[in-house]
Image 1: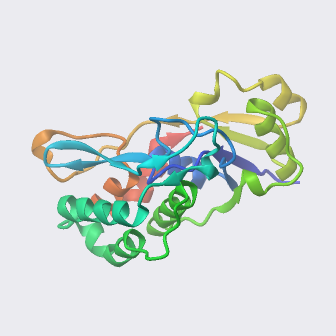
Image 2: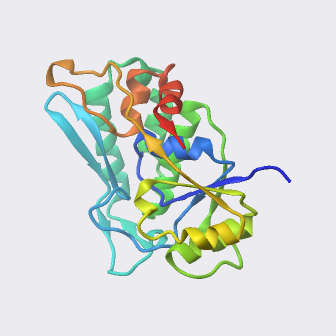
Length: 236
């Protein structure tokens, strides 16, 4: 039996490069869509760069406390995404990557059948980035994996067991709650991600470099070199 590396992460909206590094390092990437939504986190927003500095692209949401990620709805998604397209066009319209991927970005932001589900929009955003970067990970959703149970570390271990993982790829944020001994007993090795944000030529250099923005910034500025920079920036 060979190695099977599994990574699990909440679906984010056009996430930062470290997220993509985790995805491309895995054999199976699981969207953690059935855990509680985190307000004021990265699940419904991310940053781009403008001539005035960093700017949030935010999906306005309506939700009740305790709702899972796949239960959260976006308020007026058509208007929101069209406004996000206008922001991208205004700030990246002259970049090589924006010109290259104009049709794909336009279609995403002006989709007449766009779902109200934040989770669906987020997953589509991640998969658009995957297309731009040329990576084709095997994807799954925690909500669609039968026979898993528990919470926190126990739920993650349950997913890994169900998928037959030999390695679990995680970020440093999980170090506080992951039960290492349980994974060791199950024969699953834990790999912890290291990440150093790549430095590259950005638009608006007069205001300085802004690290760890949405991957959109990297793809628009360095369309051909982006995937190599992400690979070089991370380790395990």
